[in-house]
Length: 224
Image (cartoon, rainbow, N blue to C red; front, top):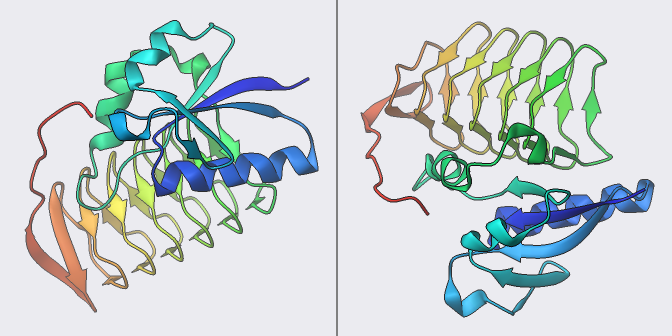
């Protein structure tokens, strides 16, 4: 039996998630993608990711209780956007879909929260805990005892050493390497290709090899 699904966000991450949904369905029919929601009025009614943009985020209120939702928004320029959108939607946790590409390798003792997305060829080795509404991009590797808190983003090609802790809403940029036992603070951003050898405090941008403080994260205002 398949479940109806709506993807919030018609950008790149949303379309990548639609591709993962398609791959899941080829392996075992699981989802029926109804379409996308996006507040950009120019996208309404337009084709997207093999489906259609149904309307803005407020359309969520018109959906049946049986329709699952996954929020696929956010980028390095606004790393808190996914959390703001989830707060705006106000849905209970059971309404959120968790999408795992069939190529993902995940140990049996790993935990994955509601609304999270794991894209192609990611690896979770052993006792990895991934919170709710986390985005894990292709070919990322999370090794033993890593913890990734809610709303964090692990970009493509990231490698986390053992027992790394990624705080709530943090963003680890593409290709970054994080040493074992390091903590990435809540709301912080690690630049792409950086090598992180020491703890990153909350709310800071770190870049380089080895990574060093660049500046504070600039907060964004708004709900979309």
